[in-house]
Length: 575
Image 1: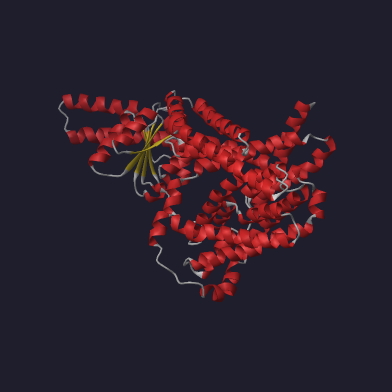
Image 2: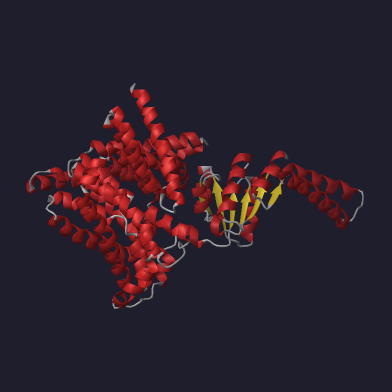
């Protein structure tokens, strides 16, 4: 019966998530809102079965692990260093001011200090996923407000890590117990960091390198998942949290040459189990308790949407951005993020907060996400209203260096060539480009070759060409030419489709080992397709005709006509 219950629960939650997620997307809301509401709706059905909460919590644990692991893999020390001025001058002050002010507000409500501490930090955290999704929906990713928003969101991602590590220490009933708990937590965290550092420098790169050499995508993905869950469980055994261990495992992989391939493989799992996480939060929420906790819910909501938005706008304006940019940046971050849910879940299990506070946090989170889009619609009048007081804060300093540094490495590549597959054909293209000093990036799945090319100074990305994250790392959105020279026809077709979607104006030249794949690659979006056997046949024709004394011009005309006829025929098949 337990087995049937688990499968049926998964089915109900998935169906509800699809339904409410579609509704949220149609209403131009983040799908996270739909997933949370789906959990609340599914919870009313599940209540009738008296499902063990441990089953629901197991779903949530899988989601937490993949969310934090993906965050760790995406975490970039290089990006943190490049955006250090904005992170230090805007990100950390925004977190500190929000936490201190929110803490005072929550203390005034009469809540225990530990609970106020958790709520203050949860209120300070925003969802970078939601913010970026709203920017994308409104076409504002390239506008000035995106830069401070991303910098502050990155700061919040960094800040959530030590808090997750220290949360278990807040369960003490006295100051002395809390102090001892903090010391133990810090000691355990240091031990975990030392172990993780050793693994990251010595063991993990060696293991991933040898697994990658086997050429099996399945084995590589299984190894990555094993590292994520193994480190997460090890962290939990040390008295820390599952979430912290998963994050640290991700950071270890992020600094290796296999990060893009690992991220591309793990993102679909993160998305699936992320749905289970958000829906699980709804399942664990008591709807009746949520309604009973409305005063605290309203307090959290106002703290997040009014206080945090205002503090963010003031900080962004203070570091030199125009008032309208500051207001929009504040509104983008005026919601509660997914890592606030992680904090809430960890705190609930540790006894730092109770069910009432947890229900209030979930209710405020859903309301803040729904209000966020409405506030963005009113950002222009709000910007005009707040322009006068905000303009008095500071002047607009020169920030050219930050503008340059805020872009990831792949974004700095522009007008370059991407060569997918550095075998005999790809290597010939690369050699010519090197001689002509044209910039190019290589994508290949041979780890030995990748290391050799890096040693030679060639820009190279390890990974599968059919992996979107790998294509993004190679700078496909800003590339001029994409040469697909991989022998795997299905991977080539997928890569062409992905590249065409990422860059509609890209010139894509693809290789098709078999005639039947020429039409498929053209249909996928290739600008030109080269069929090696056919081209070899034309070379044989060239040499044969030359032996009969025909001029090079005549031979070239014959070959050109035949080439046009052949590929036009394949285009008609594709159409």
